[in-house]
Every structure is written in C-alpha cells, then in structure tokens.
Length: 140
Image (cartoon, rainbow, N blue to C red; front, side, top):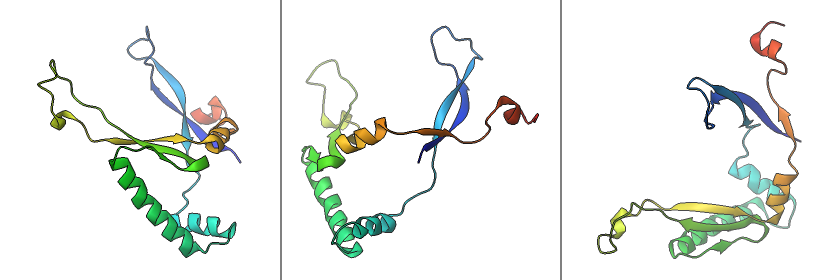
C-alpha cells in the first residue's frame, strides 16, 4: 500500500525567486477515513478485548492524557510515542512586565515512537491524478 499524493502549484518562496515564480509541490491525498468504531473493531479483532472494552480503555486514556498534560507531564504511550504540552507567548522587555495573560493557548505536541518512525521511513508513494503534462493540459 502506498501514500497517495498529487502535485499542486504554489508560489516559489525560495530566495531570489521572481514575484510570479511558481513551483510544483507534493500534497498528500487521503484515501479515506477510519472511524473510531472501526479502529476499536480492528483492535478487538487482534486481541482478547471486545470492541466495547477497547472503547472504554481509549475513553479513559483520553481523560488521563488531558489530566496529565495539564499538570505539565510528558505522557508516554509505549510504541505509540509521547505527548507533551508546548506554549508560546508575546514578549516583554522586562521580567516585571510579563504575566500569564501573554501566554498563547497551549499546543499538544506528539512525538512518534519507534514503530511509527519506522512506518514513516518505509512509506512508499504513489502519484494520484494526471501522469503526464499532456494529460494534465488535456491535450491527450
């Protein structure tokens, strides 16, 4: 199985590019969506848990993840990877001027584990759509 992509033309942002210069870039194309129920069914098929057991476990995992992220902890989920909260803020000239109201809404950052990293490096790609410039231009 391959990850599909299509080519999209965007402004060339490289140094020295002309004001109207454009380049083609790859953009991932989704091949569908897996629902939460389908994911739970998939997991249940490969272990002794029922789909309802998997749903209950994932529900509690979300609760525990949120609670621990709010407490400033890095949450490790084995081979899946880990989650941590990151923040940014507006700056001030002096420490005394700074207060928590200058902090932007936190972001949750995911760092993939070894198995997902391996999946990334082993991913194959397949171009979706026109295969030649003639097909793209409609001249074939």
